[in-house]
Image 1: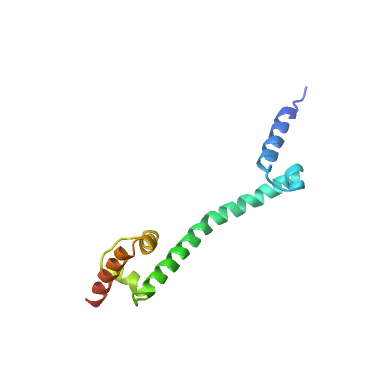
Image 2: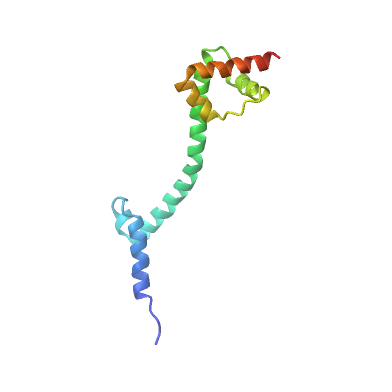
Length: 118
């Protein structure tokens, strides 16, 4: 007697349709369409996990640049000065300091300016 896939196939379909439960229309109810949508959504998810990192870095740079305008120094000069002064703060922490503790940020900028002048 040949073996049939009955229960396993049903479970496989259930798994796919459960993952597609939040989708709209046929993308939620039809197996083939749901599979295509899941494949595509996986591609977007993979791409956007990398994109998120880019977007956040961009945001931090914009925040730092805005804070530096008050001190009369450009972002590129500031980053070079950080390296010369051997200050190992990343852009995320620098942007947080610039927003929440302007006095500390001013101190960092002063150190950077000294390092650039030397």
